[in-house]
Image (cartoon, rainbow, N blue to C red; front, side):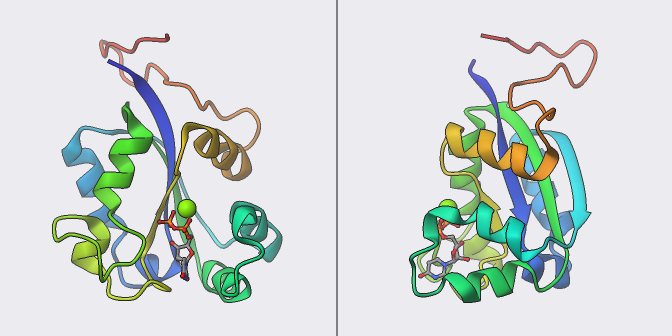
Length: 153
Ligand code: UDP
Ligand code: MG
């Protein structure tokens, strides 16, 4: 079983609406393990780096306004194929197209307020984990609980 870590963030609209708990419940119910969590308000420089690949998009400055409009809840979740599994729990980018049963499908209506972020690849996860949790944060599976089996392949 391929264990990995991914970066997930409840964005400011999700925190404001009191959905941090609902997001955490879904990840825990799926079987992910929480490896790190921090509530913080990020500055524009970090938001711009986080979404650096979208710098040329017309909505970029609104996206940065959105991400810096209040505290976010940054998390590292660990599990089997964590990146892919987290993306399927989260659902499509546009909540109007996201299936019921996904986080965005159940809790959001608007693409500019889709409440949660999840890394789109293992490379993005490593980059985002370092950006939010620092260079010393693990982007590889940890033995989080004594007795749990974690393969370090
Ligand atoms: N976004 C937006 N308008 C768009 C596309 C994206 O406001 O037309 C925002 C939205 O909050 C999205 C984020 O930019 O979650 C990052 O876009 P990406 O394509 O990476 O989607 P995601 O990986 O979050 O599903
Ligand atoms: Mg993305």
